[in-house]
Amino acid sequence: MNFRLGRPKEEPEINLIPLIDVLLVILIFLMVTTTYSRFAELQINLPTAEANKPEERPNQINVAVDGQGLYTVNKAAVPFRSTESLAEELKRAAGGNADPVIIINADATATHQSVINVMEAARVAGYSRITFTTQSGKK
Image (cartoon, rainbow, N blue to C red; front, side, top):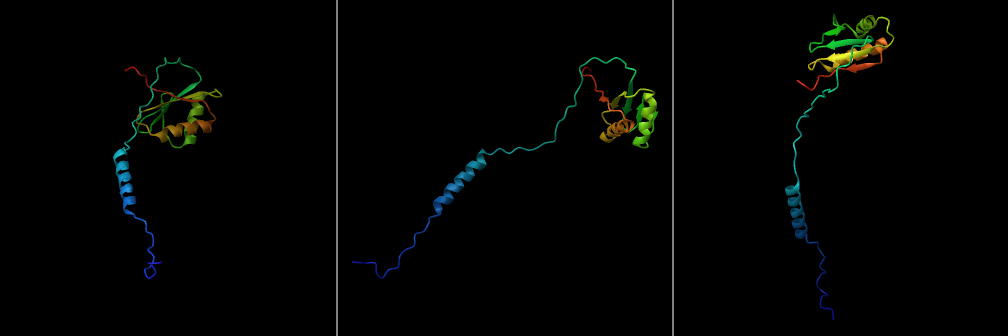
């Protein structure tokens, strides 16, 4: 005997309420356990040297750069017009030395571009040995 002859078949349906409840619990769990951190600016400490002062070498050229962009080559002020003119000053300071050591003494307030200008002038002059000075750790 078929008693359901006149009644339409019920479609199976998915109950979404338990699924929503589980997703809300997972969302709350993730929100509580997540840590939020702010990114602050980088705190950079420049290196200091602990070595002894090296002895004076005859084949070195001291180039000092200050915060205003003024250059001195072996304690003689040099106006900066271009890297080629600074390269000529480095060649003049080198005299007959084939490959002197270029020592760059940059002020803490000097721009990076002014230091790059000295390095570029040394490259144009054909000098490949470049070093930088640092301040001593003891004050």
